[in-house]
Image (tube, rainbow, N blue to C red; front, side, top):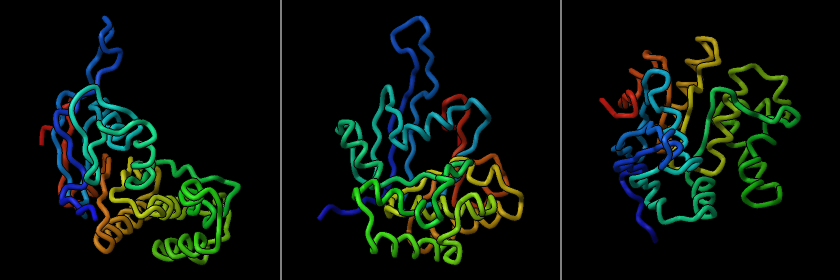
Length: 230
């Protein structure tokens, strides 16, 4: 059995350049070193254009770095082909975005089931039970059969969190998950993610501009002009 590493996420010398090898080459990440341990709840902050979104795309295996090494949940991603990266992303990474991206025609429970359905290729009663348990964790079991369009913004974001947890990921990447919510809903969503991180040991990497929320994280990683500065 493969041992579970202390560091769920490890970056060494991560660089990202666009149009490499051409006169238009632009490097936006300049040798990022970063480690995140199992169960940590980390904020990532920085001004617009600092490279936060590019970094999150690379960690989420949605883009490849130009240089450096990235290890996720004990796997050296540089050794994986596209199929391997897709498999690791589906198995070890959950995503929560500012805009929840729920399927409006689907119910809450159907939206939560989607990652499991994509993995298995068919739906069954056990999959629904798993989705219902997750909705119960986020306080929305009574909304299981309600369409996404009939839910508030805060409720929809809670469904998105349940969906991100469906595959029992090692790390959840949350990109401004409270940025589109009112203050009360934002507090509720943040508290929910914090509670899940503590009880399940799930690692959260939270990109936010909200300094008050960042102060309540285990630590804050500051990105400026493609460098980790603090």
